[in-house]
Length: 337
Image (tube, rainbow, N blue to C red; front, side, top):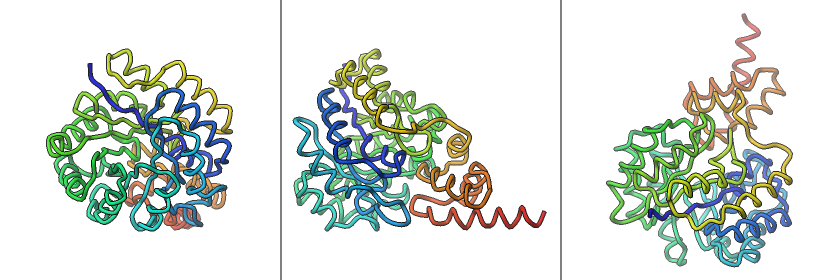
């Protein structure tokens, strides 16, 4: 029987959906429920990682360091992980997160910029932390190119590199081929993971195909809570893997209980609405959705039109501020017609 680790990102990627307004009590409740369901790794930070609370990305209600400390205090067995984007989070932030109880760090870069993560992986390994790498917007690189970037991360001390479908744009073999390329390149030195989104409704299917291609770590979020159309739902993935004879160690009844708990906490669950579908169609970074919706309200330009233009311009994570420029340009072009 194949054995994988099912990671949960409700308290990090899900932060996008709640505009980074998680309370300490909510984090404690979700961690307790996930821990009871035998989830082995729980990611906790602002949606954009350590240091993400800012004017550009949105301010957290509670600092992610305080949330990490609360999560670590609550978890009996699960490992608490933090996300870090080099250039946003710093090595100082990493050390503080470790001091507060984070045992793992996941370092995320654009799919062609793995070299900016080297010093962060080295620092994390010196701290004794488990390390993982995120190659974001993986659809923007070919399988061979992605494998080269994964090797850079592994050489720096990364223990698992994930193909990250940040726009929910990958469809079936597009995901499987990228995972297979990473497995062929680094499988004798590190694990391979997959992080899916639901924009084109392939999060669970792509995750299954990723395991078939060699992935041993799969990400999900309770009820799919996450950026864009949401993540692979943890509870659905757990049951799908159980039916397929892929062992996760997750208690499926308790993970369903955890999803019900989460649904009672949030006002809005992600959906495959027009805007998020356009993100998948055009390959737009999923955290752009709520930013585009705010710009749409302000400038009276439909959010799907803003997102489509963002896709045509090829913007990547970290360029959320450019959404305003897109909205203004579209407004200007509409006025001159």
